Amino acid sequence: MPTRTVRPGAPLNLRLTLAPLCRGRGDPSMRLASDGVWRATRTPDGPATVHLALRHDVVHVEAWGPGAEWALETAPALVGEDDDASGFAPQHPAVADAAHRLRGLRLCRSGRVMEVLVPTIVEQKVVGLEARRSYAAMVRALGEPAPGPVRLHLPPAPDRIAGTPSWAFHRWGIERKRADTIRRACAVADRLEASPDRLEVLPGIGPWTAAEVRRLALGDPDAVSVGDYHLPSIVSWALAGEPRGDDARMLELLAPYAGHRGRVQRLLEAGGPHAPRYGPRMPLQRIAEL
Image (cartoon, rainbow, N blue to C red):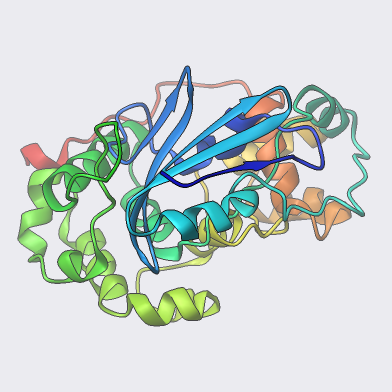
């Protein structure tokens, strides 16, 4: 069992930093546990399970499987060691407050484009709870058990997803439009891993999806999720006291943070004041039952 340690160059909250990669408590491929973070991944060298635990300001990393060495080598980037916050100046009190309270929040860099892209497409235009259920069901159906001492499933291999007919996704709560987008992306997975800047060339992948991938897989601190259902109102409320906002207003308010707009987005999502809610929430749409 290969191991290594990482001494963070800045305060680190491991759970906050890696939480965006975990698709809910029921994610079969990742676990935010009391003893640290467990994550199954498909590396360029093969499957791996990695365990990260922060003890006395040192991250202790263990890995299993053919891809263990790759997982250990990239562990610093995963926990935010490549995250360069130079030039970030919290000008607004809400941003300054969130940055102070969440000092250990760093932007991770998983390095695995498809493992972020697939669940992000699943999350398009549906309620978060339903998206998490759908992704978990797909992983259990198409992803094999991960190496290591805990019961995790590997994210499904892109070629297996690409070869799965679109009608099979319905049982997991994913309608044909999203299913076809996922299958098209997985059919060119190698090209997307090598050139993720071409994501939006594919039908069904827009600015929101591309920004999520750039921020989580590539660690881009300026990636803003334009097209998000809740984010414009979160930003407009925190930075202007306006309970409702649109993408144009959000980008206007984030303009002073150019280069770190994605960082501000993450800070406000995790610890900023959230806009008041009016009326009922979006209804939960159980597509698998239609």
